[in-house]
Image 1 (cartoon, rainbow, N blue to C red):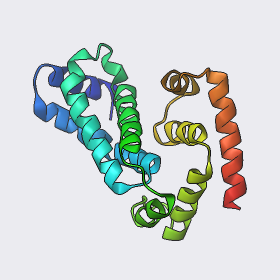
Image 2 (cartoon, helix red, strand yellow):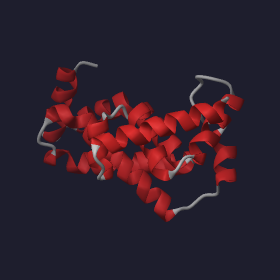
Image 3 (cartoon, rainbow, N blue to C red):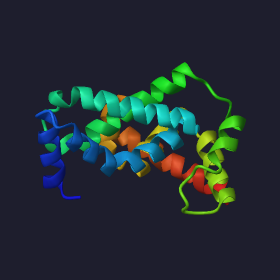
Image 4 (cartoon, rainbow, N blue to C red):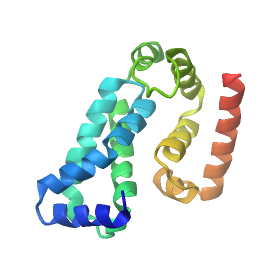
Length: 171
């Protein structure tokens, strides 16, 4: 999708066109769900987080000043909704692994998906957040730093260590 198309949909939504927001949502829904699924480890929590984020974004889109910042703004909302879901409903790793194995995108087999989920779960919380925001959310180190109240260099360092840990675990 072109940035002009997205910006046009944002303007239409800000002018009260709910169908335009539906189009915006359809552009990002799959990535939002994947992000939330990896973050929460539960399809139920992921679905709730995506729903909450979409509703909040629809209600607050009038406050978005920079139309070109829609995606980062949306994913920041989603990130916060995921954190809220985890605070409200703690799940055990074992239960999350069982429900996640058949829900991951079809980029590999179920065994590989389970290995990735297990490896991600073994990372420290901040490392996991940096990895998910970087690789699934598509954020830069600077953007992640703002979200997590860290310096960009710290984000890059955590990302580097986390990637090294994941490589080691996935051998």
